[in-house]
Image (cartoon, rainbow, N blue to C red; front, top):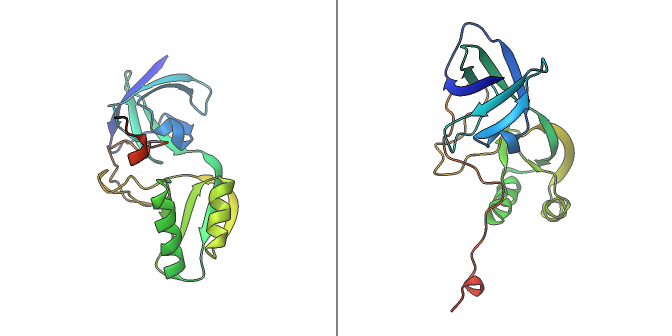
Length: 173
């Protein structure tokens, strides 16, 4: 079995592709299958998040390109930048992973499909569209930033799927 364990910046040849949803791209240990069907083991440095286009070199020298799989998501569009900012604030207030995309004229957010959040966003005036799309959430303020199409900066901090929110009522005497 091919073991992929070294993240590299570039390669003259690509020997395979590994298509993974975000949930698996944030794991540092996993078994998966390349597009060709070959089984691989992925062992990366703890906290590494694999992004679409990342390259991993295997123990035999072969290079595999990571591809973001299409997932069940919601695309959030708003009529004004202010209303989009309000939606981003409320998603952040709920510790929801979100992808920020588009440009200043036509920016949008993308989140994992969640009907409760959809209702909240529509209540804020957003147009929420169900999409099967690659999900590339922001890495957070301490994760080194998130690179967009064509950039080659990749965060090394983990992005937790669920983060426990500590409230005063949770503390025991």
